[in-house]
Length: 115
Length: 361
Length: 131
Image (cartoon, rainbow over all chains, first blue to last red; front, side):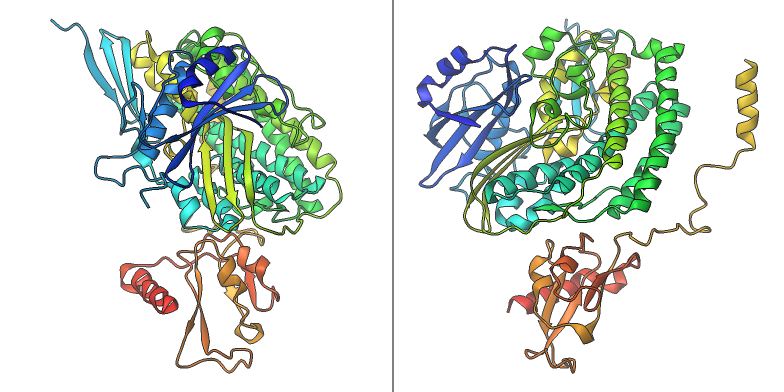
């Protein structure tokens, strides 16, 4: 697993340069709650037909920050974006919430600040 | 005037096994728009893993995410923890893990094939395949003590040893299953009424499979060479005779053929394992608490399963991320429905082999 | 057509693949994972099974009438909830004296009805255990 840290405003450009849809398989977007109300968002890719080659781009941001959308580069990222909105209560450009959670359930269960 | 009408499929529908809702926008019989809702069975497993259970019990929790690929879930989690604890598993334990993983794939694929037949209106075939699937279920019960929730894998190895007697029984049953599967291949390729329902319907081209990041049998039916068994070093798949199965048509028929061929390949691998189970301990003791991050991928029957585990050197984990196969296939599913007849939708959906309790976790 | 007719006729006289369940009992393999059984005389009250159990189906709770086992210094009683148990066998693997103090049988639990108060009794025990 190779991890590359990117600034939040550069992430779309980085992924655009890196992502070749015939070489890299997009796995998912993952969020990890860090200390001090910070959030780590990861974009995870794996290489087709290569042994254990996983690439992770990640940013560290606040819960208030607007996370840019990568749907124009990777169409299938839309469902992962909706998931992190539900799970962490963040805002993602152009995506709406309500994939798993209902209106009356516990909101943003995995974010560090809701506990 | 509006030219389209909306017809829902689900959340409860006669052809669905699990709750999912598709809203189809139809123009006459053709589907022109798809919207999906998958979150009916959200149980908060990821949250429970990090707040209610200690790391050594989480393996049993994640096995309950899904009944059909329970073994892949517990294996992925366990391997992630083993990487964090630096535990080296014996070769015998690895072989037994692959054995169960492949048996699980066989019975899951048989279930999917039977449901595809049922959705196409071929009830007799459904009964036949489900009846033969019992042979595999009995093998699993012999090996692990339970039909579905195996609880076979523990941190450091496996829970039960295999005796010579059981191995012999398993080889006999596998031979019977092989004959049956060869019979299905004949039926699926030559039956005229099945071909009307399956050939050329619900097709996904290779380029679309790349674009929508399709995985599992769905992608392999379109000719995309993606199989995590080919991409990991951890389990000894190469020496057990793993062969990637691909097809070029991308329709329902191609998916069925891929599944049948994979069953044959898995049967061969199981036989190879049973012919040469190495000597050694089945469990290695582990020490310490997990700390650091690890990311593990395995091939579940429906495609790639990913676990991301982050530990902080205490008994409670920081984060357990489960990326299930059906979850990442949903964009591809929605795309395939476009332009198909509404009447074919149940058969197409069954051919995806969706697992919604995995997806919503 | 003749083959299908022949097949249909033979199928008529074949035995069914299913078994007549309540009348004919299902034979369980001897290694089937069933109820956890407990031998009080051999127990050393180390409580390892309680700690190992993933769902918390084993509880040692203080009682007024403790057993005469001399290892039982704190006056505890073993409680087991077969309806919470997931039959994984983790407790048996944790036990220092398996087969004597704690072992896994191949029996199924009895079906509980509402009158048995399975849940409410167990919640009482859990409260006692916490205090």
